[in-house]
Length: 229
Image 1: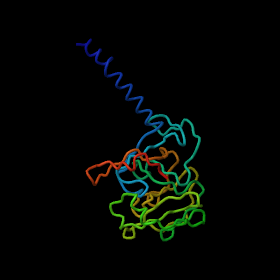
Image 2: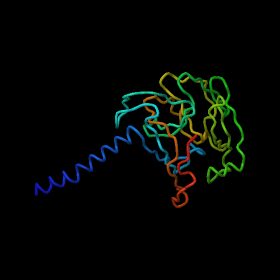
Image 3: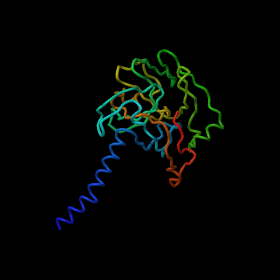
């Protein structure tokens, strides 16, 4: 009996555990995916998207920890990042709106960065259809531009209670201000405050796969491998 158990351990259990450890370490330190259960980043990211996260975009960490072994870059304004929420520790996906030293302000939904108001351009009605939203009439679509460098679509939901005024606030050293592109339906730094640099897991760079959870989980093949901007 002992010989049989020993053989089972050596030939089956131990190799399986080693493979699981190696794969888990790679996911923890190098690259991972993140399922998106909410619509806080619509229209850029939809519910049912699975996004690819480059965990080596900014640093190298010891597997399964937040310990940094090396650091070569920092998140930039406009990056979509995955981080641990300072509110409850859950992993969230949001956009970096403010980096250390930035002064941020919002007035009636208009974002100001370092005293300069963001530009808002209307999105053509025909373009809205490509986002695949089930209730597009609830939202007003804009293309937000900060410093003419960071340009991305956002949604405004006029019937939703939300924080549309804050600041001015200055982002402290080593911290970041996050917001969702779905401005009125996002729980973000307007509510839980700044995010520490060490809490940022990595850079979300593309949609890997996507399923429509409201339509029998059918695949949205048109979103497969879409780059996130």
